[in-house]
Image (cartoon, rainbow, N blue to C red; front, side):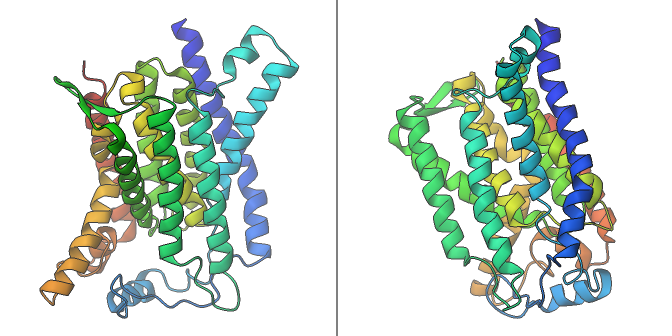
Length: 358
């Protein structure tokens, strides 16, 4: 039983990685052929003022990459996950033997919702990226509109958790549960928006891929030990696809993830965190800020910077989010990336420990 469960998790993950590696050259060829990058770059700070420090970093460390490195690399992730998931589902029906049926991890109770969320976020992100690279100089879907979409989709999913799954509380070690009732819906919306904001971590070659792969790997482990094997297989498949992306995103990046990757991944992460909470008899929500600590720091540093400039008239960081601050004070981008990887791994270990407390 244990061996078959392990195979169910690791085989799709391995397949996802290999298929992603094979698909990447095709995607790369298409992205370069159609010049899928920004034609002009006008960077502003979070408060709307000129991003002087960012322009300096871009000139010194990333000269020319904004208008020569393809965007939409996140396509590699969600197409690979979709292909592997549906292929195993179809195989189980075309060749209905015990092995193929075991490998099929598409289930209504565990994986329908995360897969739907991944695709919904990916499609909106894809539209944003298309507008972002348009020669007319459009800058994608306005941020307010994107946040509205995140609010609507997360509101629907939060309602699904509350009405369909009967989830009205989150797990608390020792005390058992913290009852929220209908307020579980606004909590899910708030967490989804916060995680989406963390998507701006996609700012240095290799950074987002390393962080996201570690986060989803941690939740694969949590789901597995909670006996949510289908969900564990989905998280592992997602991890394999992200690692395939990372293979080509390590400096110098062949392409960047951008919104079609980060929007889908961050919204899916919120769903998985809630599925590994009370429905899985664990503490997936409480562990989320720890497992996703690099995303949390990214969001907090940006908030702190905006608030400080507004009320104190000066900045706390040379540039926000935090990973660009380290670049601004002289750290090479590869050092920032690798240290974030280390922190992400340690955060994942700590978060898994908390999530699996009994």
